[in-house]
Length: 198
Image 1 (cartoon, rainbow, N blue to C red):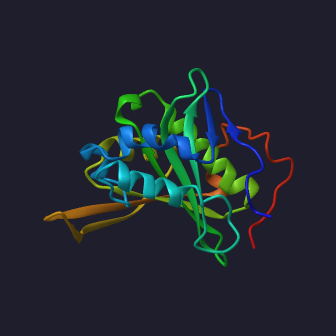
Image 2 (image 1 turned 90 degrees about the horizontal axis):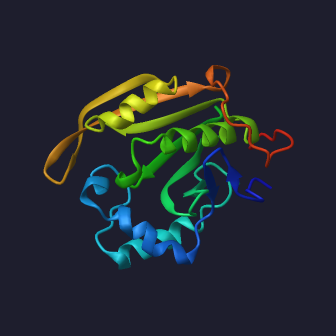
């Protein structure tokens, strides 16, 4: 079964499935205009955030292409939820996965995103034996672009004015990395053996 049996721990973080009680902490960042500018699921108030939370609570396993695992990013020290990260199984034949992430702006610039993404890349490559992982990024999100570069990902595509959002043309960048290119920095103790999603 391709699901998580326990949370993933890194040096400073716990990555776990979402709980109903997370709605207030999720609302604290998810509905912010600065966050909404970049996320795929739009939310405006606590009711819409609660609906998004219900959806993310169902993202717990990868059984078939299209499935998603979404994990809350929680600091070990104070158990504060500061963001979330997800892995979607996008293609079975080619072993492709997509990682998405959101961080509370109050906790940006402290290395938490990189730590969480490293754990998710380990999950994709070690647990699910994916061949390639990619990340989509808004061309205006300079912090995320820098992070992708620091993690050794390469820019594979730049889509200019490919979609109209809130009256503006957006720029979408695609970064990717292969299994053999990924330098593992987090050893996930939750996975004693490697299992390919199939």
